[in-house]
Length: 401
Image (tube, rainbow, N blue to C red; front, side, top):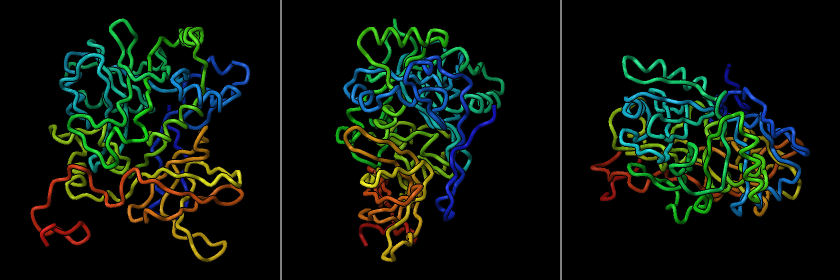
């Protein structure tokens, strides 16, 4: 199935990079037949956006008591005795010694270090499970990289479906295959650009994905509803993800994205493992600092009831009435949060002033947006190596000078 790209915004070359593809879902969830269900769109097509009361659904999810249909996600299963060392050698993650029922995530980068695929990763002791938004393309790439190794790659999306839960625990020995989101902790070998995990907006967001046979999806959800958990849509899950500054490949990434721009070195990149494709770019930007763009969290002005779409241009303000300022980036995710109101994530040029009130284009007008830096403007991680001498112009100055 061919990938379906998201919206490509117009504007300056800095903001008009081609979005990263995601794959259209192959299945329409049976839960969309529920009364009041409103179908999702874009990368969340195939499941419900909400079931009639998105605010109540979001509140239940934020309290830790709701279940979310995530059956639009793809699943790739990798078996064989060489699977972990092989995946370790070709992706950004430390996987060679991954213990069963321990969750992590990986990125597949281009030779130039740009993001191509993302997958949530968990091993059950017999196979490694990859939950991804590009199962066909990822499985095809992995099969091309097998060579003579003892691995078997299979896209099993037709057989398995994911359920989202606000639970911060790994799956147990008697539970189905379960991936617990490690965000925003800094994994061993990773680093961070944003605040420490304990001070991070995502610290209180518990989230995991449970894999169930696709034919048992409705029954698995019904069992959770019988225990008192209402069914929530992707409106609720996405609002809490945006609040947590959690990047998503189908939303925040495009074909120029490097992990540093999204603070993804926290959970998806090991800086001290062996060579893998794209490692040179990862190391160079980490050592020198200053990724070209940065992720920001936007508080949108909701007084005019206008809400931008993902891909909407982001501009600096101007003193000329009716004239937009310089375009500095694009909106990537938009949500109506039950407490914060309209919020968004956006990727902007690193040089965008941190105190600038930005202007976001909407159908019918524009809205202003205050920003919180996910990746700081100086673009330096907490453990960037100290420079040994004067650096090239534009990269900083030796502290002794």
